[in-house]
Figure (cartoon, each protein chain N blue to C red):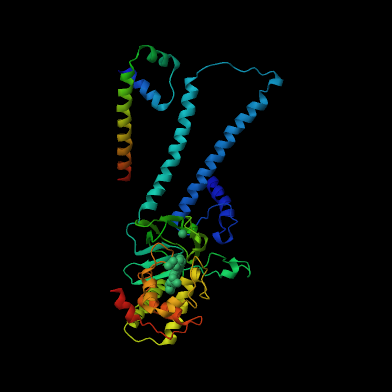
Amino acid sequence: MWGVIKSVLAAFFGVQKERQRRHDFEHGKPGAFILVGLLMAVVFVVVIAALAIYVAG
Amino acid sequence: MRKMLALMTGGGTLFGGASLAHANGWNMPVGVTDLSAEIYTLHMTIFWICVVIGIVVFGVMFYSLFKFRRSKGAKSAHFHENTTVEVIWTAVPLLILVGMAVPATATLQKMYDASDAELDVMITGQQWRWRYEYLGEDVAFNSNMSTPRAQITGEEERGEHYLLEVDEPLVLPINRKVRFLLTADDVIHSWWVPDFAVKQDTIPGFINENWVRINEPGIYRGQCAELCGMDHGFMPIVVHAMEEDEFDQWLVERKEAAEAEAMGVDREWEMDELMERGEQVYGSICASCHQADGGGSPPAFPGLAGNQELIDDVDWHIDVVLNGVSGTAMPAFRSNLNPVELAAVVTYSRNAWGNDTGDAVQPAEIVELLE
Ligand SMILES: [Cu+2]
């Protein structure tokens, strides 16, 4: 699970280690990445919105 | 860093001082409000950040091209993937962008904060003039371009403020927060005064907000910045910023004049008075389509001089001016002109240019029709 999150974070940032990428493609399940990706996208939006609301006060 | 910033922005003023009137300036003006100066500084800061990035990136590139050229026996390195370098070239632009976004957002927030204004001015874009209304003060007027046609057609020498002059400028006080409520009657226009760093679309059916607090008295000029039809280039903006007491006095005078005019509705007007007032209104509002000599430009704009239909039927004539002709360019003037102006302009067109009907339409008659 932590591995999936780390890979999704790497994808958000746009940089991934080749070794990890190969590992994900050979052993990971696509569904897990898609689900975690969607969830973290929601978390990202909520965090940005909360930050904006906090700063605009 | 201080010194550098001063140098950077100073370099900008060299070009930025030029106003719209001599539009050969290279840069945006520093302007005459705190906010316009802030926007200018922001603009220059980001500009110089881009310059530095450009110099560094292209410097490294050209240096490498030159220093490691093949004729000097350089061998290319063959490697694939370097996570550290990739992380750096992703993180650095991210930090630069966030670094620019923080001050930009702070300025943007100030620009949107139109609260606590001491004066509200409603600005309405119309084809092709601006209408200014001092809300709660009973003062309102149209502001038309005053550059003579002959200058535009090239028969006359162009004046100093060619296409940037109006019959009645918007008058504002300095040192007071003025809120603008902007809308339009017909199509989208945009109210733009570079010295205030204000450029706001005016959209029919919507009211946009903006504001200024001017620091220096003076005359500031701008233009409509949204392509809005044939005479888009002929609806300039002129703002006369006055000292506060001077402005208060001006406002009182305008209010008294408006009251006097409102009183004028009840009395009988002489032919001469109506003709004089009518000529004024006709020249500033109607002449752009129907021409100063009443000849119009048929078939698009009918002539009013010697127009038999108009001469024969005063009721129809008044109706057209009050309510316009829907589906054509002829606007309804019932809410843009006051009863005195309406009566005067109808009287004028019924008697000028040899129409000579002898009809004097009284403001009181118009008031009745407006109810
Ligand atoms: Cu316009």
